[in-house]
Length: 300
Picture 1 (cartoon, helix red, strand yellow):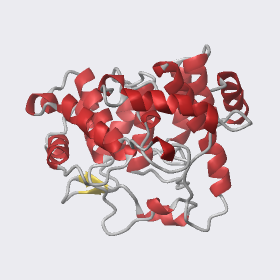
Picture 2 (picture 1 turned 180 degrees about the vertical axis):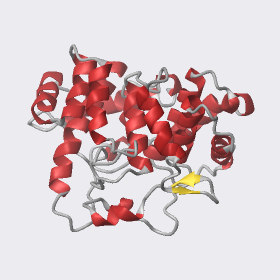
Picture 3 (picture 1 turned 60 degrees about the horizontal axis):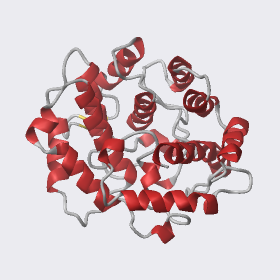
Picture 4 (picture 1 turned 120 degrees about the vertical axis):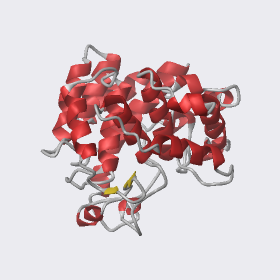
């Protein structure tokens, strides 16, 4: 992998948010600069939207976009303590916007997504709920930062469902990342309700071993869960002996799939008629390239 070309690609093509993240990891950037940039995606109701997730251009606040912001803040250590920003996110989540009060779960896809350029998976079908994505990580966030602790047991219910889940059930990387984020958030804040009831770390390691694709030939061309989807500067404690060879194999593959301009490409389409897909792809590519750089940096 040509890291210099990848770095130059990000500097030239990334949005201000991804540039701030790059500078935080590889330059003289600060955590606060990342926070400032991420606040550009926050609405007056304190939730996030505005295409922070490049596949969904809905400007309205929604749970998935807010979860995306939470994950980014977690990555740079901005969720280690309470702040005005965490208070604002608590305010949005406590409003129960896009929340099913009967099922006590946040929606994965909201109705207003259809009114803006988006990938097909953001279209709401049925109740708009996709198991515990993003509810488990949003619930964990509330447990860590809300003065009125989220006591509905939703996080425990989520891990119970994960524990009982069949090995054959399809699970995408983003689903599992919600569980990983929930576990790490609560452990860092000394809330041990998950680990006290489940051997949660082992459970998550087992699920990672099941979810990460073992057919390395698919890494370059297909949308399959890869080590770099998880271990790009985070979640290193969940790397197992079974996963290490897959990490090594993907690192060796990076030089083959890196494009001439130094960046990496996405492996999916929108499957909708929106012409904005190419614009979204151009936003995604620096973001993906940054993840590949971090994956390379932390695992070589």
